[in-house]
Image (cartoon, rainbow, N blue to C red; front, side, top):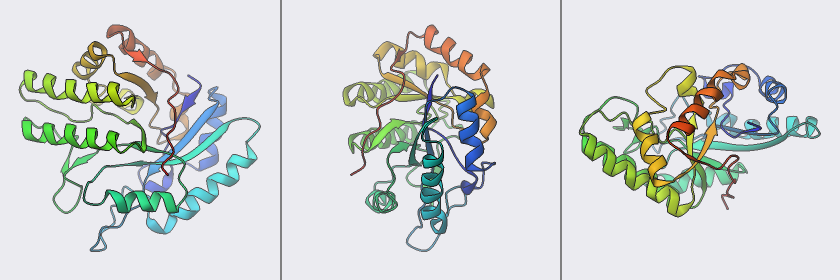
Length: 257
């Protein structure tokens, strides 16, 4: 695989290493197209700033530091600079304005919460049998895809639904059909492979294969050496073969203007 557009930096406080190390490891891994997409900075109206995001005070340096490195390595690798961002209807326009002002080049959707993350948001990754939560998650992901600014959906199977299988099948089919219709790829997330998480979720990708939704891959790198892990790619390939997934390879990055 010669691309990855899901790369974090230490600015989000849950990744490690310096920016240049990620670039060096990407080159060593044979990656020709590297995108940084750390968690987009945002401050809620009452001043709350989630610690898993890039602090607003570091947003400009995130972009400028990577631009310097992009120039340094321009003859060895193509580098894009963007953000991983949620879709919160109430705050979306403001979040998008911030990304635009910082001159981000692309966005990937990482819907880690439903109903916003603050003050009473619900984490998508926690096990739940609440079918209404699943419906809200799917609604928000589809609404996000319809905005036209997200290049793909990161870990679309992050919703850990433990309820009725028929409900799950119906809702995820709806999500995958929207992905196909809008031509927004769904990401097989390699962090889930590396850390043995509940995703990639077999039941999700079985449906994606039946529907024929476009599929891409993201390393979701939080350490530079994550880009050198070849076992995770073998696991992703096996998943694609099992469910005859519509793998498109490198995703097309959408402008956010």
